[in-house]
Length: 189
Image 1 (spheres, rainbow, N blue to C red):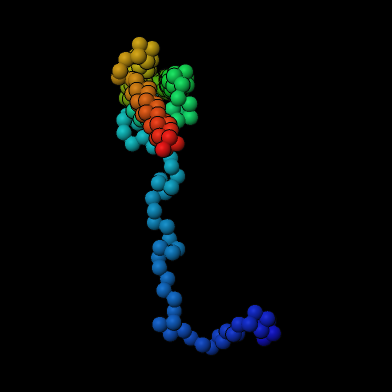
Image 2 (tube, rainbow, N blue to C red; image 1 turned 30 degrees about the vertical axis):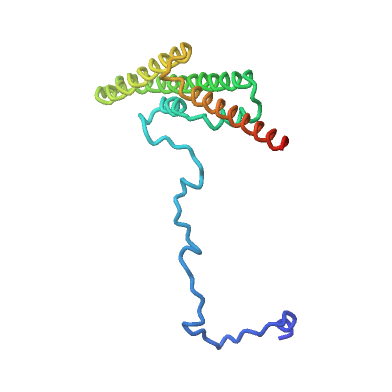
């Protein structure tokens, strides 16, 4: 009993029963999280395309880097800074080409081993299915080569990330100029 007096609270009488009105309301949302776990993880998930590694390249080419360009212009409005930003985007794309190509090369080697095993075991149908997958991978490798040439030639179809970056950079320059003009105009008054 002395322990309860220490906290100056009334001791609990175990014989007392709470009535329905006295019971606290317990809501399901207080204890159960029904939200989509995908939203909370911020995981980039490709939900379109072929389902093959080449989708990573297509996703990169569809990027809108306008905000990045805008932010870069606000940090440093010099043209050399913009050019280095464009170079970084091109380099990231080239690295992505190489990563995807390496993945396909590895997958092609593994497929060839499986095809050889199936043929040796007298399973031509399974070997044909694997061979079809191998042809798909080879087509994707050829397409990656075409995309690389388009990047080198700066063809419009693969330049979207760069164009959006440059557009954002120009908007950033305009915004920075506006800030400077408004700031100087206030000082003169």
